[in-house]
Length: 130
Image 1 (spheres, helix red, strand yellow):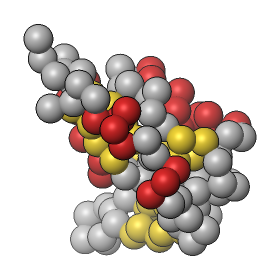
Image 2 (cartoon, helix red, strand yellow):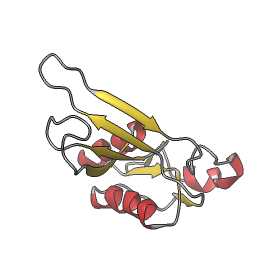
Image 3 (cartoon, helix red, strand yellow):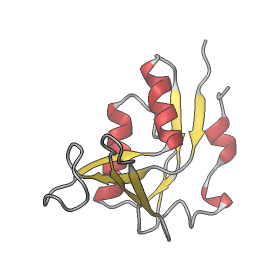
Image 4 (cartoon, one colour):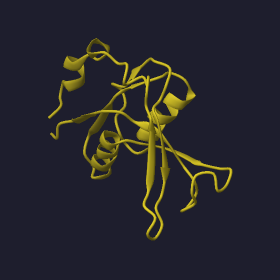
């Protein structure tokens, strides 16, 4: 039986102008979630592996949106800890032609940045993990 793969890190709210527009060239931004370790968990789940993502997120609607986005893609979210007040945000402006992409991070005081080791039950989290 395949063992569970555990990933741990920060998932952030990504705000990006549509297409290749620059910041504030229009009045809308697309909101999605991303982060290196979360992306790895999603990729593993897409390959049919039992992938789990661990982080700390607020229990408000934005934090729940991050959890829901992972669940929708087949990632196990049962070990996500709830608490704190902020989800980190990053703003992404996709590059076009010779203009490079721009990425601005706003992660100060996010739930995961303020998390403590004792917030996580690591024995439970790694039980059955490879």
